[in-house]
Length: 184
Length: 184
DNA sequence: TCGTTTCGCTACTGACGGTATCGAAACCGA
DNA sequence: TCGGTTTCGATACCGTCAGTAGCGAAACGA
Image (cartoon, rainbow over all chains, first blue to last red; front, top):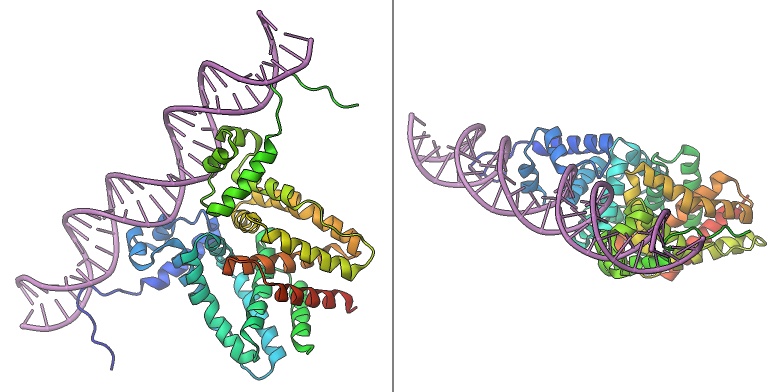
């Protein structure tokens, strides 16, 4: 049932090394200084190889984030618990080295790049929107609002101060949102 | 008491035209394509003149935003009313042509530019933080949290969809925040 | 008219995203 | 061992854009 391996030189597992090198470079130098040349050098790969696998820097970062984030850990039994879990999960992820800076950087790039915005909306936001809609039993509009508030708040703090949000504010965020989504 | 006019060619009111040209260019072409050459051309001014008055593109955009936003219209009598007023005010401003894109663009630039982040924090956020602290009678931490939630949410929606937040979601944001800040 | 300051213009540098080309490496099947 | 196929590496290159240098001219006050 496994498709026959195509002939030619195989695509060895370069993605993992590229993703790691991308996050490390972004963590060290920031999003704008993390050039494709530097990422390629850090991964021990030619720059042309990057462009053979990803159409643009934004697409590489987006895929890197998809890989770094993984699925949202919700179980679908208790709505309030799932919301708190999701908020603490994404807070922790954004606090990981390079993830927050990469997130904010690609998000900014997307503001004036409709193609990248499409990539971001479909590859990043869409899976989490669907998962949260099922787990929380909320409408699409309310889940999108939930994502806007959580991610927007965390990224704004990250962009303004350069550091992730402190725990007491995360707790306040959880209480505020939880109260809003359970008061009806 | 007015300081004697210095000799030499006077600095005529170029700022207003430059700010208008900046917002118009950003509105037409987006943040990244709004190059300093294009802004200068739209303002009928040489590019070198821009760099004589602002040290970088980010600083120009930041000053342009300060000019476009103006003071926050709070009166300091009713806390809930002032919060709703402030939220609707910044929502409307971000929805104005070019303001939202400029805001998101300079915010992204600032993520990896500590100098620009300093400019943004002091020239943009600081005055509003002080005004809101006085009007709302809240601590610095809670006002900064308030700003993170409001601006972050609006910018995230703007960046993800390319359009400002619809009115029903703005109302939900006001209710959620108002409830959170008056429940103790 | 002279001194001072700002402006416009042209040309330039350096960095970066992205592309083109060509030869070599890595695999499969025969 | 030997072609066929595909991917990779290296180098060179283009276009764009932020930011700078230098010079002459314009706009004032005295």
